[in-house]
Image 1 (cartoon, rainbow, N blue to C red):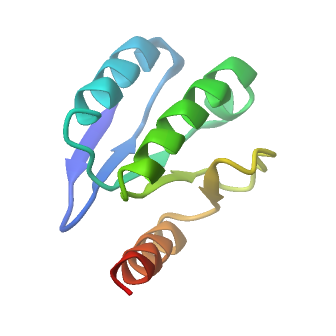
Image 2 (image 1 turned 180 degrees about the vertical axis):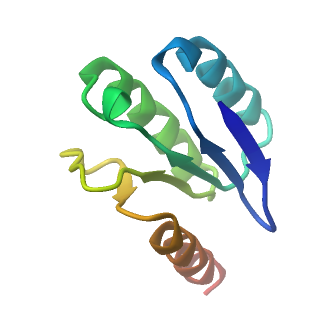
Length: 105
């Protein structure tokens, strides 16, 4: 699992199923002081319904905290209206900037 700090967000990538406990511990740590997050998910995460439901809880918390919680899912489709899932990292970054603009208006 990789975590990179960018200009105004953190980027999670290369998350493996074996990393899920560590991943959720890191997310819990970010709840103390929420920051914008972009999370790239592999197929094994996207196809695991219980993991997706766990991410919904985090997404709702981030939304209430006025921060972005965006999933990069490639060609996969996540059918949950409470999660923002976008195919590519570039689109996710653009979406994050649009959300920031909306919050500042």
